[in-house]
Length: 319
Ligand code: SF4
Image (cartoon, rainbow, N blue to C red; front, side, top):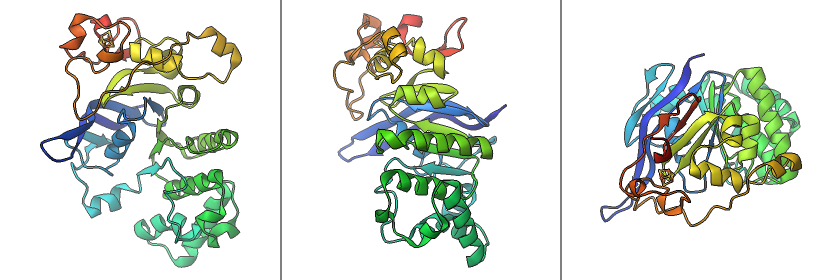
């Protein structure tokens, strides 16, 4: 199947005054095929969320392009672009506490997109909201309640219903379970998996839990300080990482299966991610890399395919 959404050299900087800018996303090229789940991993501050938001137009692009079904999307969305594209591209947000307006009822929150983007009567909107409340495991009579009356897991279900009621093709899931108790994380993941199958969704699944990303994703992309450093099939990247950053990221991520945990190398990640305002020359991971070489400090490695492997890696160990 072909690419549904493609970023090509996508860059998003934020100006912060005094000629300084945050290099949040720096030349990322990544495609998501139809009905595929691509997991995007990396530490906090790696630019994952900014990439997801830029991909669906919630941030304008500093440079580079995004195509959706082959159509190049605008550099900055006008209201009419949101109106047209929101039906196809949606986002499920990380924090189910702050992403729901506390002054709106659950029915108003979930039905808002329908009112904005579809020509439906009040009754039709209410019927669709009731149907979606049931689909995400809540009750139709929850419609008149407010977000504070629900648990974290229930609020994330409301957020999922809000994003999916327009029946988008592409959804960016931005750390959808990281604010939830471990006991409800699996329920939300299973719900997303069921809806993905039933609706034929294509997902970009952003998370910092690599074992969860491996579980849900077809491919895994690893991001470090605004750039992609590794891309490949999720299982292969997880069990046979090639980039030194992926190695330490996998090694420092607890594996829930004790048998798998014993068989994996354990590596603690050292040092701090550099500031995205003062991006280092050469390889961005050089100050933390256990295998750094002289060339790494002045020449930026390109993301290139590895010989005989279905894998892309940006590292001088392979050039
Ligand atoms: Fe380490 Fe050099 Fe590879 Fe960067 S390019 S990850 S510093 S070996």
